[in-house]
Length: 456
Image 1 (cartoon, helix red, strand yellow):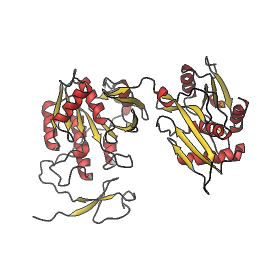
Image 2 (cartoon, rainbow, N blue to C red):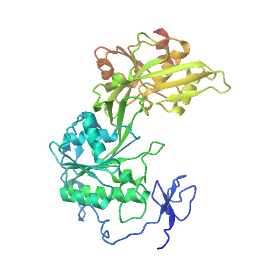
Image 3 (cartoon, rainbow, N blue to C red):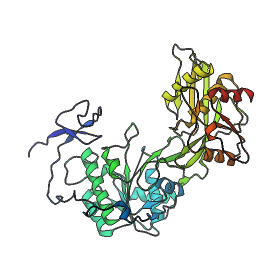
Image 4 (cartoon, rainbow, N blue to C red):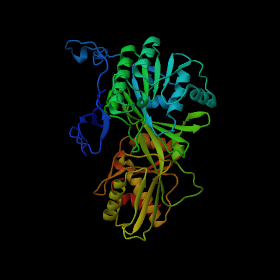
C-alpha cells in the first residue's frame, strides 16, 4: 500500500501547499496552514457532484423575472424567528456556531419537537448516542414522539436517508463529525468540512429540505473549518454568552433571507432555553439609589433598540503605566475617547486607571455609545452620580463634536416606554415633534454634554 502523502491546507481559503509555511501564499493569512492527507477519490460515482443547482438558462432581464414572497416556517420560538428573519425557509441552509455546552443542541431539539408536530423532522447526531438525546428530551419535558433520529457520521448514508424520506427539516449535529468516503482525511479536516457542507447544501436546494448545520468554534471564537463554509450556507448564526450566566444571545452575521445583526435573547433554565420578552431588563442594573460611574445608553441590534448600562470605574494609578480595560466595548475606542476628553474638555486621565463594563455581557460594536462612555468616566472621576432617569447616546468625533447616530427616534421611544424622563442626544437626532414623557436635550459639542452633567 502506497504511503499517504502529507500536504498543508489553509483553513481560510482551502489552498494546499507541499510544505508548511508561516503565511498562506494564496490568501496571505498567517498561521493558517494545517497538516492533512492529500485527497484521492476512491470511486468515480461522484463525477457529477459539481453540477450546478439551477438549470442552465439563457440571458434574461431581471425585471422580467417574477419575484415571489418567501414563505416562512415558524420555529415556535419568536426570538429565534427574529434572528432568522421571520422563520426558516424551504431549501435554506443555516449554520449555527457557538462554544461547547452553550445550548446549540438544546435549542435545535426544542425547535424540532415543535416542528415535528406539523412536518417531518430528522435529527442527525454525530456526537451523541440516541439514549443521550432521549434523556435530554425527557429532562427538558419535550414531546419528541414525532422527531426521527439518525445517529450516523457517514455522509453517503445520511444523504441516502434524507433522499429516501425527504423530510421538511434536518439538523446535522455537527458538520465537523461528518465524513465522506470519497476522501481519505479524518472528519473535521478542511477538505471534509468543505465537501460535506457542499453536498448538504446541494441536496437542500434540489429537494427543498431545510438544513441546519451545527458548527464547532475555535478558541478565538470563529467557526472551525475553511472560510468557504460560511460562504456556502444561506444564514450564519453565532451563539454567544457566558457559561457562568444563564443568559444566551444569538446573533445573525449573514442572512440571505433577512436582515443581519439581529439579536435573539434567551435564558437557560432547567426546562431548556426560554425567550426573553424584555431584554433591556437584563442589561440594566437595579441600584437602590444613584451611583457614580453609571450611565444608561441605547444601542441598536438590527431593528431592536436595547437599553444597556455602561459602568465606569476611575481610580488613581499606582503603576508607571495606567491601566485601560474595556469589557464589552472596543479597547482602542476607549483610548481614543480618553484622548478626546483630555483635549476638548480639559479632563486628563493619564494618571488614572480606567475600567469600562457593559452590563450583562453584551458586546457593543457601534460608536453610538461614545457619549455615554465619556459621561460615565467623568461621573466616576468626579464621584458625581448621573440622574437614574437619564438616557445618553451619540458618537463623539476626534474634534469633540457629537455626531448623529442611526435610529434616533426608535431609541428615544424605547427609552420613554421604559420610564426614562430625560435624554442627552446629538442635535441632529432631536425629534421634530415632542415625544411624550421624555425631555430631550440636544448637544453639538462634548463640552455642552459635560455642562449638563455639571448643572444636574
